[in-house]
Image (cartoon, rainbow, N blue to C red; front, side, top):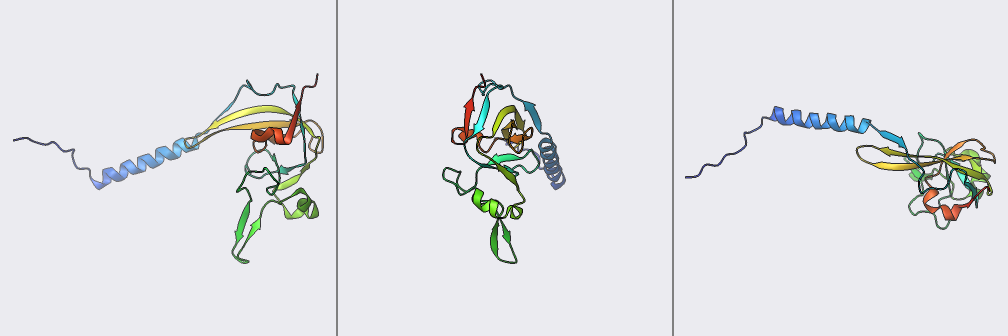
Length: 177
């Protein structure tokens, strides 16, 4: 006759304790964000100057807790799909746009768009200042930061993540020598 050995039954208290411990651990891990600068190997040289090929918005579209970023209007050709940002208004039962569809729409009434600080004009020069890598329990990401060299925002740091993957559409890179 064979005997089977089963694991001991766990009480409801020990099961709940395990669940609480897992929740606490997950919370602690998520609270720990690892941020480190990344060497710019394979990226443009530090002295390389980039020039905007077209007007872009300067503001806080995605990352409201970071430096402002530059980004194109959501309705322009070549812009990533599903990037129209809106909020549902329960009173009017309509979606309210948070970003203008074009530079022209912004210029008609700039006060209507609190996420947009202004427009960075074509020809504005900037350089890549630093790249950081952030890692949390659930995600990791690279952040590309530039510094404006001239124009209305000269000396300001800007997040380049929205244009960097499609840099050829938005910037020309020039060697100052």
